[in-house]
Length: 121
Image: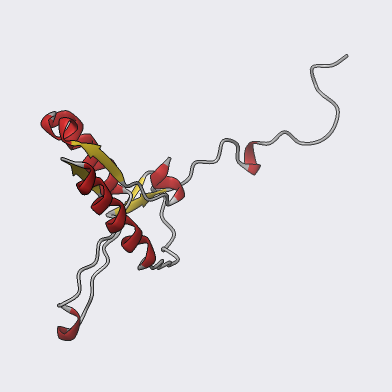
C-alpha cells in the first residue's frame, strides 16, 4: 500500500530488533522500498539523533514526476534516478527503486449500467 500511494516509511527501533536478523531485514526492506530509512537505536540519544535525521530528510525532500510510456505491466515498475554531470557527483541522493500502481477496486469498465435489474420480475 505504501508503494502504491508514495508513502515514505521511516523506522526507528531498539537495539533488540537489530539483534533479530529477520526483524532487521524487514525493517530495512520496508523503509528502503518506500524511499525511507531504518534506524536502530542503542540509547535515547540515538533515538533523538534518528528523529533529527528524519526531520532533516523531510526538510530536504523533493518530488520528481514523469509520465511513463503506455505499459501493460500492472505490478511493480522499476525506475532509476541518477545525477548526471561531473559537478553533481559530490551529492548523494536516496530514491525509491520503483513504484507499484494503485489498484482500483472497481474500474469504470466493470460498473453496472443504469437501468432495470435483469434479475427482478
